[in-house]
Length: 254
Image (cartoon, rainbow, N blue to C red; front, side, top):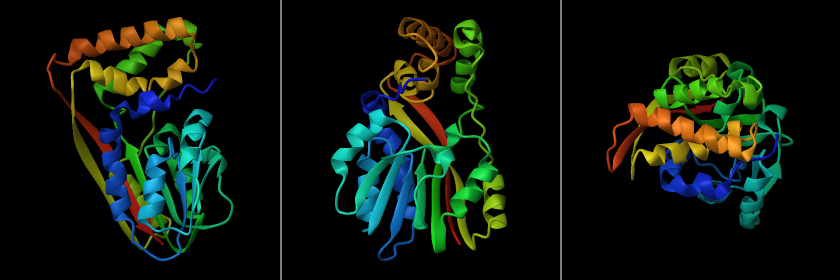
């Protein structure tokens, strides 16, 4: 599969996507000389904010998209650097004081095993800070699955399904993994977008990229058009358009 992550498309909604990032950073307890890893660092701008806000000794941003990393590398220096890698491959050598991930773990399955790996990357008194969108039970995601089934032949049967735990299950998991302090909460972010068309553009920069990776460009455009047609059958034609978005914020310290 080719890398279809588009930094410009993703950052069309930079202000909206950044809000939970800042809230997650605020949960971290400040200490001196922190070594930090940011899993799913994207375009790097927010990782730079994380590095500076924590006054970290070292921050490593990890992302699987070379397209994203090309933009992120402009922020390197003063202890901040970026590396190509996949979260599921357990990137980042050694232990860290903060393991951070904003809106990335939802693409991976097996969160019980995944969080166990992340916990094992922490130094004593280390902190885990994760933000996970939890929208897979919402019509905007379910319609993408329906559209994928209509394009089953072109996709070779591929369907993108996200498997996120409940906030309570994450809290139980943190306890089981030995986090002595934790803060797990479901937060609904209300985004005021120009129109319902912006919802399709929002997902074109995130969820739908998985389908773009499996389709020829012309077929993908037909896929997006069909998805948007389905969206418009359930979303009111309002300007501006209020778009509630559910996210789970997770913080813990061992």
